[in-house]
Length: 535
Image (cartoon, rainbow, N blue to C red; front, side, top):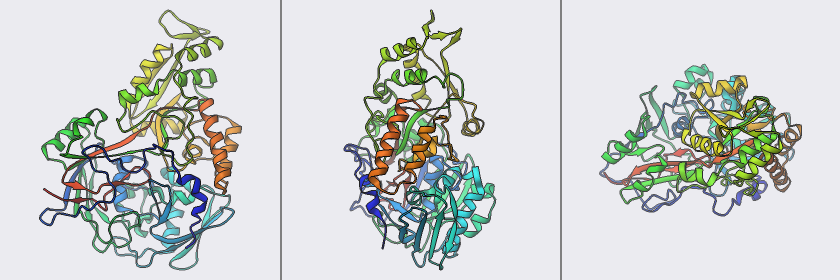
């Protein structure tokens, strides 16, 4: 098998202390290989409370963590990625080869893989998946980002095919591990985008039984599953028979249900409750999101954000250690770069992102801003007011709002729905976006900031940065690419196009009789090895 994994040698060595894999917390599950076995006298059925409506089950269309936590159980990918090392391993594809110029990727599928509707996984089905993603356009913006410059798929046989690109595409290989490029059945691919959001058929270890918006999702174990990746701890069918996902938006109701035994697992245990559930009665599962940390993502064409001194002052005015204490998990850490510390290719830029309130004020005053009687800077009759548009992490934004007011910057919060958030991106009507973007590859910065990206959020107007973003995506040599990625991170931090606030940790909890919950490399839940060990 030719996997070209030598290309990822530098990416495989993640920073010391980086939060990768599932953390073993005191009195908690480590989430790694375990001698635990399913209890013979226990029903292998669990109730897993979700924090929000998935809105769309189709992993090719959604970027919502909750949706992907459900979709990962139903849909497999061509490759898998070890969250601890970054190594790529076979999954639906038993082998693959990468052209030296990064314009073609040839895969050989495992024999005998079928979708839950009984149809076979073939090269033509994969080709149709990729063609359909391109046809979905903006509805599948993340997936289309991985297929940048897609030039079609050549089908050689039922099990061998080659994915072609008109320009080098270094990030497609890692993209093949993501749910955004997860493989769906022929009938699912042929359905409308709206139909796919309600029901999908994959090759996964579970099947979608029902999805009632704003109420619940139910998945059932699929009989005959026999093609898990080598990263899993057993073979054959999943242990769990049924997983019921009630949608419980109130955090206190989720934690109360876990305490009372109504729920076996809950999504997004509030960080403030972490210590309370660090006992032998519960298991905690924690993993930091790779990619771009929770940040202010800037639109330099809107409001005051074209002023670099203003952007830099905002960055200097944030005490990220304090934000982490106020809003963060005890398992997390303050961001020290525009990539999270668990992202391959991360470079420590702690000095560039250091809290410096006096420095922030000096920058503004050198730029002609004068502190007003109300404690807010102004210039030419205009207050230094900037707005961040977001649909989650309001506690993080409120902490930043207080800190920036102390240095004379008026930060206004525009909390909107997820739909309105992406609507703002489409129109460009925002100063800054409050969000992060998960990806286990530094190409996430190109996805977020490049004019070439279908998923661009930040608008920089910076030709120098644009050239570097494109170059790293076309560079095969790992050392050369790292040099470019280092320069990109430094430039983005120095010019304050992305202003990090918090490294987000996915934190979930279960009762002690539920074991084996793991994360994939993008910090999404995988329930294949999960089991009930006691009632």
